[in-house]
Length: 138
Image (cartoon, rainbow, N blue to C red):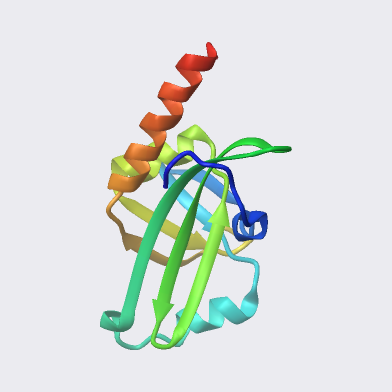
């Protein structure tokens, strides 16, 4: 997504927290799912081929909030679409770029779902952010 002014701020409201857990000293990018109904949708999956997932990094600016770097993670399970919007820290971004995987966990840190992802868009977004911060002298 190009660095432009956000027109529809509601589209970028954070819906889920993202954290980095360390499993056997290896950082893993996780999204916390607190909605039990969504957790049940994952448990009801019988055929893994019915799942489609995508992640899209965004870098945008808002007049009041300033520069926003985040991601939208979408999962389609049969006809259900689950969408997650989060504002991760650098460690999370590095973990998903390195592993090309993302995990959905519950608030007790138990894994609900995981999938491999392509992170080309995120790499581009992170490099745009790095360039922008250099320009600002941060």
